[in-house]
Image 1 (cartoon, rainbow, N blue to C red):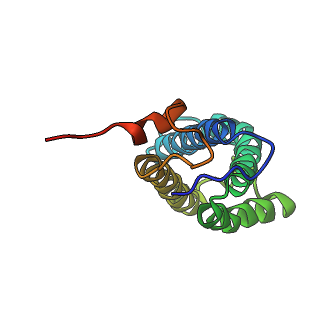
Image 2 (spheres, rainbow, N blue to C red):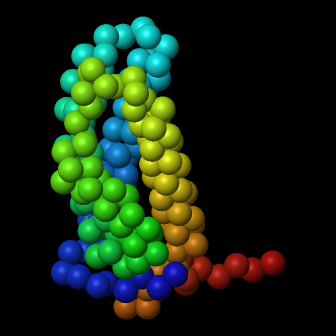
Image 3 (cartoon, rainbow, N blue to C red):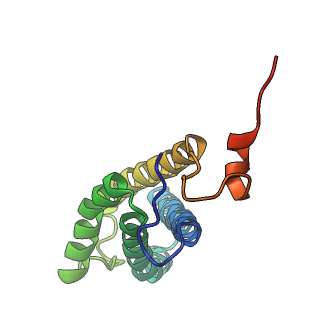
Length: 160
């Protein structure tokens, strides 16, 4: 993979921010899934679940927007563009004021919310797997001098 510097922000910082935001999104999604699953088993109070889910929605949307921007700035266009349907969905939910879960209507939308959460979780896990794959096949760029930094691996000779 060719790792060209595309912005004034170093690629390592963008990769670190991408990892943090992806981890935070996986946390938000799994915690929300746990809350809704507990609610579907009727072990928790719907008001408390709705309060916790509503508290997480804002940071989740902002973190997802940051992740999408970082992926596009990093040059990972495919994954960055694949985020846009979810960003559009989040924006549409927020714009129509449907992002907040009402405790009186939570049971009528419970199955839909769980389905959306599962899709989001699968997508974010796919992002993590894609990142790991890119790190495994990464080749140091040619603009780093030989014998310095990560590029020292190119100079190692393997003999039989």
